[in-house]
Length: 118
Image 1 (cartoon, rainbow, N blue to C red):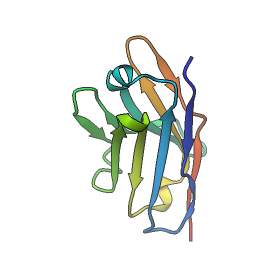
Image 2: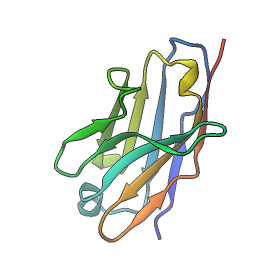
Image 3: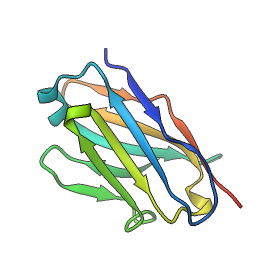
């Protein structure tokens, strides 16, 4: 069983930036490249929603609300995926979860709080 470790959340003012990280320390590189990597978020009182997805063949999807502001990426040498968040808005506030998914696994991070407030 893989354990995903998230980091990088915090409090930031509107217009600011944060970078989230999610590391799968025990995952071997070949398995890492097979993963569909995704970030989800859950705002208070709302359902969890997909924010960004990176597919094994390289294509990427973003929620319309974050397109042009957020960037998902992966670093196989560090077994880590990232979410660079720029021009943050109050409505980006929530708990962010990372997800590693394949035909053989469905791993979730513990969640990291992102709060955008002046």
